[in-house]
Length: 497
Image 1 (tube, rainbow, N blue to C red):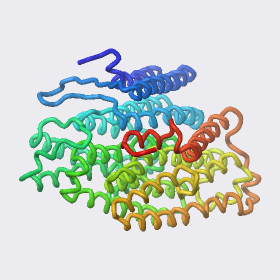
Image 2 (image 1 turned 45 degrees about the vertical axis):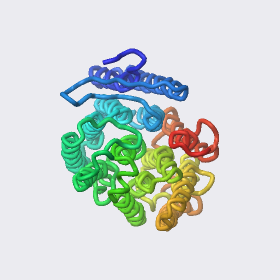
Image 3 (image 1 turned 180 degrees about the vertical axis):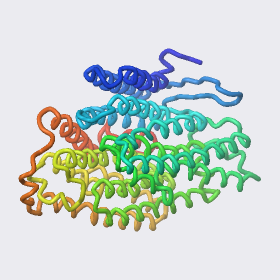
Image 4 (image 1 turned 90 degrees about the vertical axis):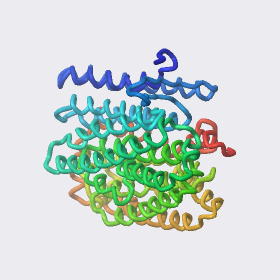
């Protein structure tokens, strides 16, 4: 075990663990202390990640390794892919913390919520910095246990039922991962992540076994990534508070699943081996089907958060689609969508939370004329919707451009057809919402309804919404400049800026 500077990935995880323990110890009282702990832990984590980011750009490396069992080490490291996910998570977690403090100001059980909220970020950072499949599996399952109390936070029958479904899906996914992990360990021994994979020398004579192991991992990660037909838990989980919805969709759970699929293809099997075994075609086909299916179901939802949830089912699969397509351009498109979808979708869920808290609006039909009552939130929602559709120059356009260009370069025109169909469906379920906000008259009953959030609480909800909407806009406007998510991914993949 090596501590000191090399163990920064460990410290990033432990910050949130310590924060959670202190919050649990404080209990429901001393709200100002709890707020200071929440914000202090989130800021310190972001500072450490920024230090690692700068150091890695200068050629430094970080790794903490601790033997747990013979042949099985707990490994936390930081490579460029780690930093892409960790930076997104840390930044959006800080913003979501500010939002959650305002959102839950008058709610019970805040200590429980923020305690598990911090454990959730600790597990996410563990997933991001895992250096092998064994470590990834540990934190991946801890993420399940940390997010379940957030899903059931309100304690209603609907929340409890949603939490039960969430556990059923994710624990079954965990069992599949464990079987795959044990099987792979018996076949190959260590499971450290290596760029390009490490299983090619074992392929001869083990093709069927490797295919079975890949499918187990694909299904295990596919549960949290909401791949068809493993997605049903996600829309049901929308009974959770808006900060939890933002957490599930933009930062933690679905991204952990998608991130696992990226590691599986790139750093365990390697794209070349996975392709030779026909596995990338399998993943691409499943991802493409999910892209279309999620969008079709989103069209049918009248509840605003459920429409956004099915949009996530569709949009997150772009990540798997890009990685499975392969080639520099498609891989860039898939990886940068990890960030772009997070920025855009968290904007939309913050807006949905503002509408719900401000005016009690939950359904699509209630959006009529709300641009007059809540103009700032509605502008942010419009930017988020346009970003999901892929209207230039927003971040979603950058993703789809690279995915489409990558599909053309890889000789897979059918993927371009999927992207076109998906874009049309995105427009079909988002543009009517924008039309309702700005071009439908405001009903008299809504015009007379008092805003339930005012003053400091309004600022705590609208302020973070403006910040993430601006980030989504800037990620597209300045996509080609140094420091942008796209620029970082291009350097990581090895393409030309």
